[in-house]
Image (cartoon, rainbow, N blue to C red):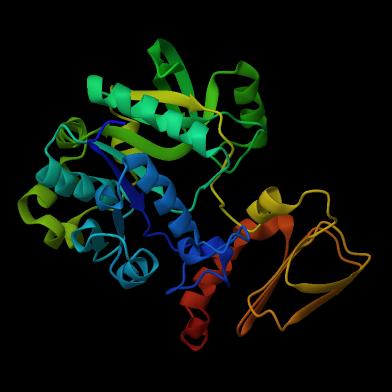
Length: 353
C-alpha cells in the first residue's frame, strides 16, 4: 500500500433520522447498530487504520461539540489529527480544511482519502482492494476518484453517478470519467438509470492527491479555500455552507468513478437496520419483544430491562430510548428529521434532542 495514503473520517453529522437514539452528544456515528458492540466510528477507524498501515495516519474531522467524544471513542488518534470545526458548514469546508492541514503535514503529493463515519462495509478485502486501486490512480494522475456503488435496486435515497468513457484499469478494476452527478431521483428515473447499466450510487468516498484538490478548489470554490488558506479555522464563520459535490465534484473535469461491488450501506435511517440484520426472522428485534401477529417490525430499546409489546402491527419501527418512545411506519422514517426540527423550535422540548 502506498505509504502516503492518509485516511480522513468525516464525523460531524447529526444522524437525525436515527432519533431518538441519535442525539446531540451521542450522534449516529457513536452508536453500535449492527450488534457488534463497536460504534460505527470505531468500525470505520479500524478498517481505515488497517488500510493505512498505522492509526497515526488516521485523521477525523468533526464538530467542536463532538471532538471530545471522538477522542474517547478513538484514544489511539494523535491529538493533532482530530480537527474540530467550530460550526458545521457541510462537507466542502471540512474537506478543504482537512486537505490543507494534511498538505502542510505530509506535502501536496500525499494521497488523501475521505470516508463518512457511518458506512457499513461487508467485504473488507474487496473494500481494501478497491481503495488501493483508487489510491494508485490518484497517485499517478491528476484525478479526483470517487467510488460508485453498484446498485441492486432503484433507490430514491441515494445520489447517482453516470459513467462516461473508460480511461483504463487500476488494480484490475475499470475506471471511468464521470459524465454527471444526479441528486436523489424519483422512482421512475432511478429505474431508468439502472436499466442503462451506466449508473452507480454516490458513496461519498473520495481519493485524491492533496495538491490536486487544493488547486481545483482555488478554481471552483475560492470562497472556501481562500479564507481557509489565509486564516485557517478562524475563517469558518465566513464560509458558505456547501457540500463537496456541489462546490467541486459537479464542476471539476478531473472526476473519475471506480465502480465498487463490495457490500455497502450508508445506514441512513432505521430501515437500514432491517437490511443488515433481518435474515429470515419476522422482525428485527434489538430489544426484549413480546409480539402477537406482528411482522416486518424493527424494534429497539437502549435499556435491556425494558420490554416492547406489540399486537397486530406490521411494517413499523418502535424505538425506546430514555425518555422518548418513537413509533413510525417504515415508509415514513425520512420524516423523523421534521420531528427533530419541530423539537428544536420548542424550548420546552429541546432536552429531547
